[in-house]
Length: 225
Image (cartoon, rainbow, N blue to C red; front, side, top):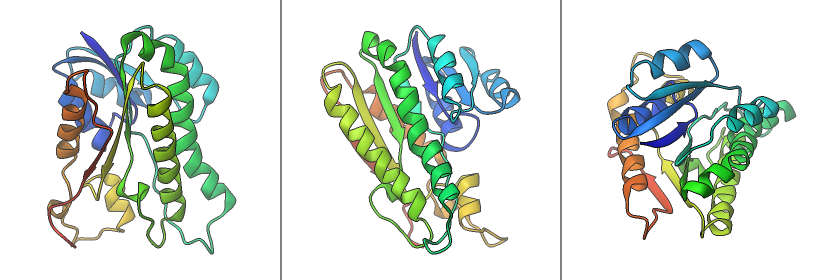
């Protein structure tokens, strides 16, 4: 059985990806809280909780060293605090980049030997904000632009060894989306992409033959807002 590590796998898109991959993969369920990771892992026949604070680089290095076999690394964990350029602090920017950029870079570096051995795949959950920045989202978009640059460079550097996929969903019906929209009683999640649809796209991208790779894929809501 193939092995996949999914960060941010206890909710939202990460949890939906775990559901989609569970029939064919042994899953490492990544998250910050051990109890949440254990609860999600218990729902699948082949899953291991992997509770790690991704901004603690020493903890990430130690946890990654325990993984000898890995076919797929999925970066789904991320944060999206909003704020205008005029009033966001340096700490705000640092926090966003620590979680959305530096953590995926460090985890990828730590797991590259295992991924090279399996000729595996790395999949980053980016965003439409990886191409376009909106008012109030400068730090988030900047981090996603940076994540796309990292993903593109990794793909070219490791093309002979691993395949690298960048998935760019638009607005998805998740807790993060509710927070970003300051959603009240009129929030209608059916106007956004279902996390299961993003997971389906990810599963497709990971499933194609080794003669090809889905390098980048954009997924948008059917309806306009």
